[in-house]
Amino acid sequence: MNNGFEVLSPGLYTSLQDLGRFGFEDRGVPTSGAMDEMSFAIANALVGNDEDQGALEFTLTGATLRLTGNQPCCLAVSGDMALSIDEQPVAPYQRLTLQPGSTLRITRTLSGARGYLAVAGGFKVQPVMGSVSTLMRAGLGGFSGRPLQKGDWLPLNGAASAPLTTGSKPEQRLMPQRERRPVRVIAGPQDDHFTSAGMADFLGSEYRISEQSDRMGYRLTGHAVAHSKGFNIVSDAISRGSIQIPGNGQPIIAMNDRQTTGGYPKIATVIRADLARLGQAKPGDRLRFEIVSVEKAESLWAGRQALLKQWLNQVRRAAQ
Image 1: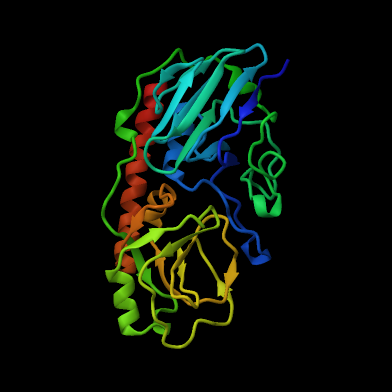
Image 2: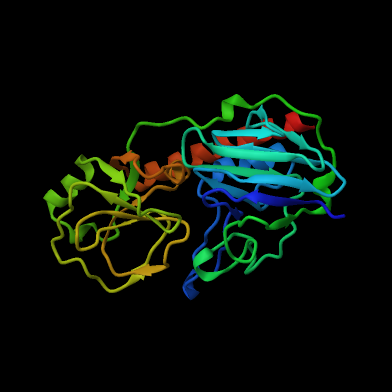
């Protein structure tokens, strides 16, 4: 019998993701992919996978999975998650071995919004447009183009059954830290569509992530931002992190499953170095914004990538 996970409980929103589906935005297909690519890459490194191997992404609550087949499975969970194997609590950020018939229960996030489950060798799924990432609105990728459902069976690649480890100590230094500083942005590309008072309100106000937020975008509530040239523009490209201001003046941050074009002016764009942190934000969290230069944004991205590379190299050396 082939190895796989039987889904006993799917959690709130559990989907298969990788680092994204690139090269199709001109045809209306967003990149999708892991909302927190740092935690995603760390989970894969812990089990010896390439950092872009498909893994399960959990939102607020996790799934309960039973291993079928006759071979053990090496896995790792990243993110600040509460989890257990056969009702015995275990810690995230370590390599774990799940035996056939055993149950992995990932109950909820303790902080942040998302966690990741990687298995050695990955899941046996056919890529769509070069990616296994799930885009639910289009029914693309993942397992039947949708989040997990109770009764699903998730096949594992053969390499996933290899007993790569007998256990490891949790990598506590990789645990996400709750940062209180503002989300850093670059102004524009349509910052000239707002009054000076509107820009000051945007940068000086605190916003709350509303319940009407998901992988497509975060709707914020707070001080309305005033337009100077109306709230409609000729539709143009929307990137991950674009902050649109519709007619009601309440910002919307475009996220991984966003539409690829839109007709609201964009007051600012979240810098790439802060997108993983933003991916861990949840409804009720409060945000402030701070403008930085393009040069500063590039420097911050280079520093973040250097730190991630250092972490991944340390994790892989420990796994040898």
